[in-house]
Amino acid sequence: MGIVRYSVRCDGCGAAIVLRIGVGIDEEQPFFYVCTNCNAVARGKMLLVGPGTTRLELVGGKLVTEALDSYQVVTLHPDLPSKTTADTLDGQASSSFLLQRDLLGDRFQEFYERLRGFRGAIDENWVAFRRWFDYYLDENREQFDKEGEKLLGKAWNAPRSDCDRHHAVHLALELLTAPLWVGPYFPEMKGDIAKALAAATSAAAPVLRQFAVDHLREVVDLQRRLFHCLELYIDNRSSILPGLAIEMYKNGEEAALRDLRVLRDDFPRLRDLYIATFEAVHDVIDFVMALVNIGERKDPEAFPVDKPRNLEAFSKLVNADKAKSLVSLDAWHRHWPTILDRDVRNAIGHNSIRHDLPSSMLISKGKPPIPYLTFVVKTYRLVHPVLAAETALKYLRMAAT
Image 1: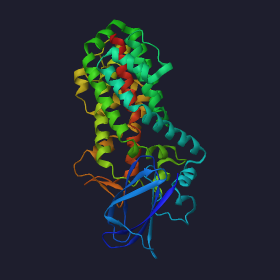
Image 2: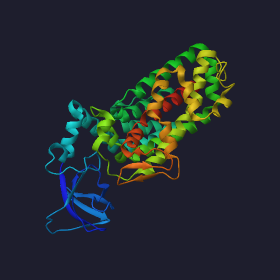
Image 3: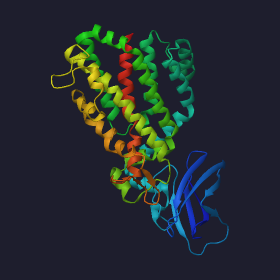
């Protein structure tokens, strides 16, 4: 992982700046930087134009070739949290690669294996997997089977039934995203929902099947929504993946917030992703509670005495109250506030919120500022509720068959 240096001048005050940019993975690597002399923001892209060759494009700054006697130093990496004030005298902090090794400690190798594993799998397979999942949602069994064989090769087993298809596509989805599972959130939630399905099947299998058949179209529509959220996640992976490093730091987010920054201005896209995902997975809770109700009371509409009278009333609850009802599912109840932050969702839902680039804070009138790094980590964790919700819906589709 190399570093390239560019000498630039601020368009505002004319201050000299040396940009020390770690070379990332994408062919086009957007970033911004702030002039410490006048606080002006400049945006740029580093382009990979050949092996070992880069080109810089700037808006708000000018590339210069003359020698700079006195200058600011800005150190950044498009894919990693950086200590932006580090210069060549700052030891490990002067290199994003060495900085990550210091912050990650004995998890350094694991981090790069996770990063390479996810990026490699997505770069190689995502287009085909997206097409395959569309065939699955459209119930185009012939094309689904053909695409599955092309995608999985020798690992493909011809499905004997739709249940095999449900299992195959979701197992592949888990394998694609598994490198991102730093916390135990999804695996534990998957275990919970599997127990809920087993209880419902044991208590009242005909009731479960009839409910699944009656609500099949709604379930498939929700799967489409969730897969759209996953597409947004994958499409914005370069903006989100700094969260992987932060999630694995020895001292977690606290270590990152002290003096690290992510110099990418991707907030509008990540905001839309967060809100869309937050709403979609909360809508799935209606069906999760139906499973729980069947397992505990043999009726999808039967809530405990002090709860809503039926599913229609439950669906009208605000999201916070829906989440509180997950108490029967231990892992869902424990992890939900961690992987879906209601305060963050409410804060970013206001039209007044903005990403203040000089401070690297999300600023909204009347609300405490949120560090952009914190928001990136929260967005990174969205893969867990999407997978858990998809698993719940998969089980309902299996019950319907």
